Image 1 (cartoon, rainbow, N blue to C red):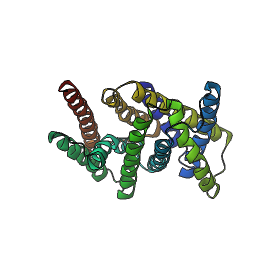
Image 2: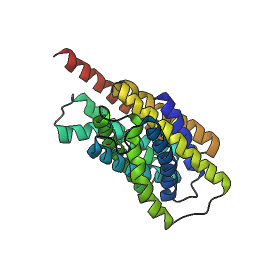
Image 3: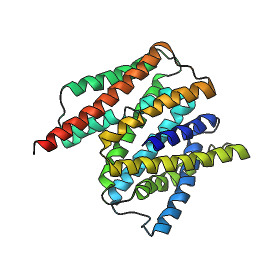
Image 4: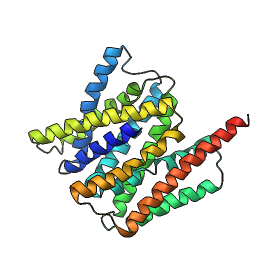
Length: 278
């Protein structure tokens, strides 16, 4: 998970540096590079390209594409740390989806964590004029899509490999975003092409690392490590792009990270108690 965090942050910094390119073009380039690498890996392993649990692989791929498109768009227009921390609402949405569709029950105090997380996001928006309501809702839409993709990944971990799971994302995103980007294509220099390839390679390795972490370990144990990415993004974006976040916006980011971490750890303790009681 730590490897995934560092690589994802590096890829997002490249996305920020390529903000001149349209969002569909960025998503297409990332997906196309990753798809080629995934197909080669599956071919060498002798695994089926279309996988096994195709219903959930499709859901994971489609919602992942929507989430990534919205996330890349927010990265291009608002501070990287703000875009990252808004996307970290996905664990909250995961629990809310489980409550709505699986009838899952949670302890009352976890609702306080949810309220604190959304309150922190409102602080980020309210005290930073660069974060408009449009980009706030786009970021939250990305978090919701990521939550659905996460649930789909869990459904597939017994039937498909980590690379097999992420391949569907690229198979869906490449033709859709390729068609879209053809209408808005921006000419690229050799350096920009190299950076685009870097986004695809870094993101793929990060995605496989995170999926493998979720395959091998309880999500509640490894997901808190993911939130280190917001701190890393804050430091690097401040250093490289002079994206300064101060005052109450910084407090809001801290509140969100504390709330989502507490929620994840609380969920882990609840599952352990349920298991020990059986």
